Amino acid sequence: MGAKVWDGNSNGPELKDIHISDGVFTDSPSLEAHTISAEGLTIIPGLIEAHAHLCFNGKEDWRAVYDNDTPSSMLLRMIDNSHKMLRAGITTVRDLGAPTDLAISLRDSIDQEVVSGPSLIVAGAPITPTGGHCYFMGGEADGELGVRVAVRERVRSGVDWIKVMASGGNMTPGTNVERAQYTQSEMRAIVEEAHRLGVRVTAHAHGVEGIRHALAGGVDMLEHCSFQTPDGSEPVPEVIQEIAETGTIVSPTIFGSLWGQENTQQYKKRATLTQDLIESGARMLMSTDCGIPHTPHENLSYSLEIMQNLSRLEPVEVLQLSTNRSAELLGLPDRGRIEPGLRADLVALSSDPTDNLSALREIEFVVCGGDQIPT
Ligand SMILES: [Zn+2]
Image (cartoon, rainbow, N blue to C red; front, side):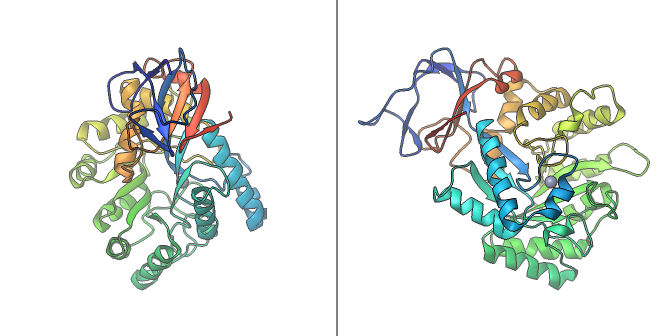
């Protein structure tokens, strides 16, 4: 009661009351309702993180910790990280890389209220060639037949998305971010198989070759899409145009390591690329790759501020990339806005983030699926 409410869609907040019943927003209070005063606070929809790794610790020693884990110690860290995210106002998390059985178990346990946590969307172990990026997660598959089997296995396990490593990655020595990891025909086989089974595909892709192969395969989304080239040359305009024309979604993974780096070449190149993608009309949502070094799970608010600087969007437009727009592009029509009938996910803040995104760090309380979370 008594709060300013930004519904996830409009240009700014307005004073109104919010009603919740059975985990969803409703038009009017239910009979047994209790009232929470939110006088002077600003309420926004729960935030959505589109690229997370709950199994990583967000620190330099991530790989040693990962390699020394037992399945149970890893699962406990995943639960702990999911709680950190929830307390930071993130009520939906898409996990794009964890051992498949652990990711599915945690998602289902949260859905069944065995443990508390944000709503999870999971891809399980990314599909990668033998020795390819993140091979240690157990997702190696080679050749058109091999990758088709890998897709079928994941769908049998119940994943929500297929994640494929289309280029090498910075975090796996021996792989090359500038080169494609799969042929175009392998990428096509992955997408064809996933779409036949009703699941969408997102591709980790840094260099231009990996992005091109992913586009040729017909993927639904590109992670990072950072256009890393051997000579640091500018992004290829025709590839950006193709991303926009095909409607391929860009999940830009704004890393914490960009914080305070405004004067570096890396930052300026990223700003140009972000603005070029937006100008081209490419569909974009917000993601951070949290769990990797310098990108703690609870720091989405910092990445949103970096995104505002990179993109020159208004705060309200940046917030949409983590609420309404993100839900739309991820295919989650039941969330992302404060509207009767939708999942009751919200964050109450002491000041208005549509004025200044730093307000996202002053959280008063979080509601996830209708339950108030202690912060
Ligand atoms: Zn990642």
